Amino acid sequence: MTVLFEHHDRTAVITLHRPEVRNAFNGEMSRALAEALARADEDDDIRVVVLTGTPPAFCAGADMKSGGDTFAKRDEATFSAAALPYTAWQVRKPVIAAVNGHAIGVGFTITLHCDLRIFADDARYGVVQTRRGVMGDAYSHWTLPRIVGMAAAADILLTGRMFDGHEALRLGLCNRVLPSDEVLPVALELAGNIAANTAPLSVAYSKQLLWDSWNLSLSEIEVLETEYHHYLMSHGDAREGVLAFLERRQPQWKGRVSRDWKRYGLQDE
Image 1 (spheres, helix red, strand yellow):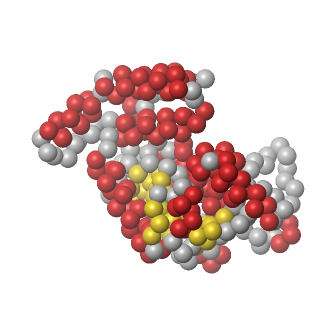
Image 2 (cartoon, one colour):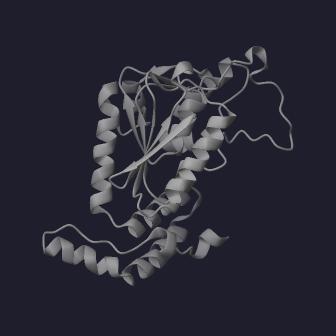
Image 3 (tube, helix red, strand yellow):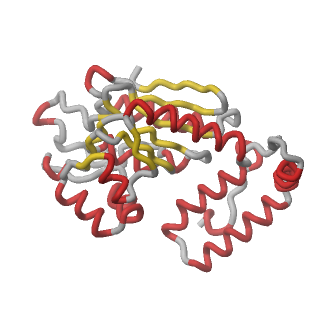
């Protein structure tokens, strides 16, 4: 089993699990990870997803057991450099990357699909594919410039160099940097806070618009924010959130993403 799936306290923990090869990424892992992400999206009992790896690494990158044929030419009709057929940004819940060890190549670029990233301070990171005769994958030429800007993205993608967690934080690649053994516990604590305090539908629409915003104009953002507000304000959770705050109690959310999610306006184009 290349990917483990656990669910407790409204948090799904998805673990890359090939520790004998430092969780090297292969086709089986790609399919299993996509299935796990889709499962988390569909289950209303799951409010937050944490993606991590079985020590000693998060993901060492592509499985190179084929040697020189690791990056051999693929069938043009079926091959995609996307790495995953279903990505973390498609999950309508926050996805936290608890990167508790080395994340190299595709092992790094898939973390860029997540909403929040916590990195181990002494681990090594990099998009090294230009040093292997190929290039960055998994939408990295779309995610990286938007996360860190063009200059830093060019540095990472074109040089293929490695860097540690502290530099990743300086570049804006992650939200926090911690000792490796603290990464997962802190990610789970953050997940618990989100699950306990935020409305599922509010988070789902906010996440959707955050990712969509990279391709939308200011006026288009206004249209969608307004449409989402109309919908959310018509839902009972908008009343519950205020009452829970005023009464100093935990909110009892009724909204369910699987049942109440609606797509609006520009998203349908």
